[in-house]
Image (tube, rainbow, N blue to C red; front, side, top):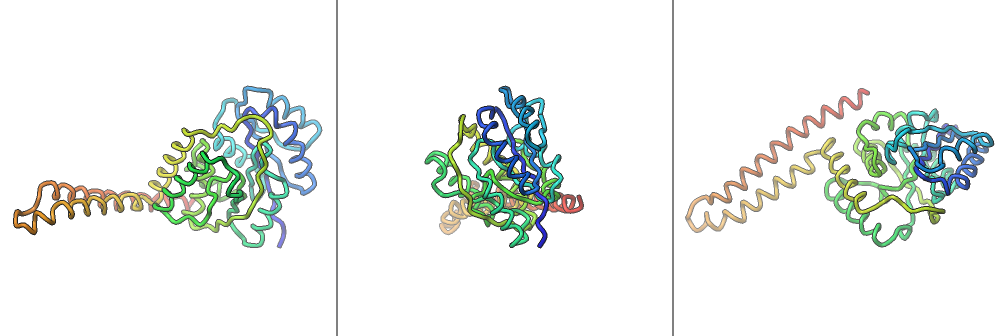
Length: 294
């Protein structure tokens, strides 16, 4: 099988300390393997752009400059639009990702003919605080929909560019992009697989991921499920209200006192949520049809 063309996208925001060490390694790696390297300077307020411009004189890569900070997802979107490869892969600018893992993900794609390959990080690669947050997010998602991957929010992913371009309008510009783009591939019945990767310590600086990031991610994921599979949210709520109404009203009915007003209210709520879910599902189906046509 012929090796597909590959574009490596590196979003960079205030990574002046890491760029001189990370970018030359990636640029030499891309030159050796005939890959395309695109570095997106996402409105950095430090010397990131100047350093990239200086490095470009010695190494072959593309610089895309966002005049304002668009966010992690926004930077990747711009990189995908610039990419010429059949597949794209995202690599962080902080030095955590290893170049050999790029070849591992590409090899996995060629063997499985997958549309997306997620780089699965070691289980102990995050702090306890972030691990708890990721676990909560995964638990919520597993209740709402089946997910065939374990490391949903891994920053290193390889995927089909043309499919990604169709999904970009539905993806956020925030850090939640990594999770949502994976859900988009899963929702649209494309093949998503995982491959183990290694994670090094961040070279310099601090991660911008915070508690706020976790809440934004949960919101964006719920929003995506509402967009493409709303019945998974409305139906459980409908069943919940029905059961509450049944528990409330059944003893009263068995005692011969008729139907409780409170139980009747819960039954009406149950029916309303179910009908709203059906309407939302029909709207979702129309969106899916429009997406496949694009």
